[in-house]
Amino acid sequence: MILQRRNRITRKSAAIRALVAETVLTPDDFILPIFITEGNGVVEEISSMHGYYRRSLDKTLEEVAVIWAMGIKAVLLFVKANDDTKDNAGRESWNPEGLMQRAIKAIKNKVPEMVVMTDVALDPYSVYGHDGIVDVEKGTILNDATVEALTKMSLSHAAAGADFIAPSDMMDGRIGAFRNALEENNFSDVGIMSYSAKYASCFYGPFRDALDSAPGFGDKKTYQMNYANRIEAINETLQDVEQGADIVMVKPAMAYLDIIREVKNAVTVPVSAYHVSGEYAMIKAAAEKGWLDEDKAIIESLTSIKRAGADLIATYFAKDAVRILNGK
View 1 (cartoon, rainbow, N blue to C red):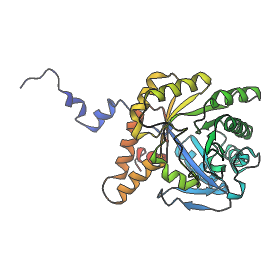
View 2 (view 1 turned 45 degrees about the horizontal axis):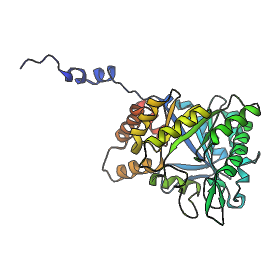
View 3 (view 1 turned 90 degrees about the horizontal axis):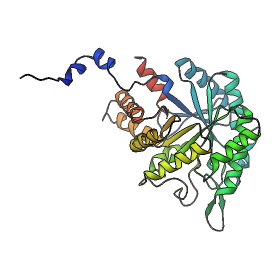
View 4 (view 1 turned 120 degrees about the vertical axis):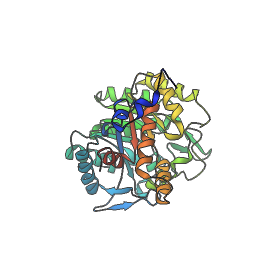
């Protein structure tokens, strides 16, 4: 049998496969989400995210030093607010002495070169667990009032030293409002990584357990996107870029690889993807059952996200991925 083309030639050894690989993961691809809680000396495993933890600020600083030494250069901060600080307006979110603001300052002091990204949404601070201010009588989320509150929150993060604010709320018009406010308040070097295409997904369940931020009534479908829609994601993303987003995000990642590719094809700014808590938990659970090889599943999953078009990947597997890539 004579063939003019034998495709298997470039697959015949590990060395050759590495030479011709189209997609290569490195530690530079990863953003590590970090959950911070009040207290001292606290390290609490999140029950629905086996092997992942909430830490008090002192323990968070230890973790940041570890991951910087590993080669992870970016963190995405989330805080678990105490119940007595929660209200409908999210006022604690722009408290200059709040946990998030203290965390930003402490991390930048500990590891000045670490890229600090901060979650911007009201759900951790809301008595109702929603990303925005609730009209209690109507049971609806107030868009414009929420944007005003989130703008205050964003400015407080910028003042504390954040490199990027990462609005995850999906309110209309918020990127333009944030960009204008940052410029007007001399924070022109603070970037915006917008959750541009954030879907109303069942895969967020463990995350809400981590921050005690599940909605107290209804759901988030009036502001997060319908998972049946594709074109809407492109429209949302293009609007965010026009309004001043420096990086755009698709969330979740693995069930939305087609959206990541569509967004990558549509924009010229970097594209990030969030490998969310439910996706993490599924791999962990299957591995614990012995149904798949955890390390291989981690690398294959993350490679698929990058192959789809993600320039950056926020993932709870960042530390594991670096360990595996380094052959440890």
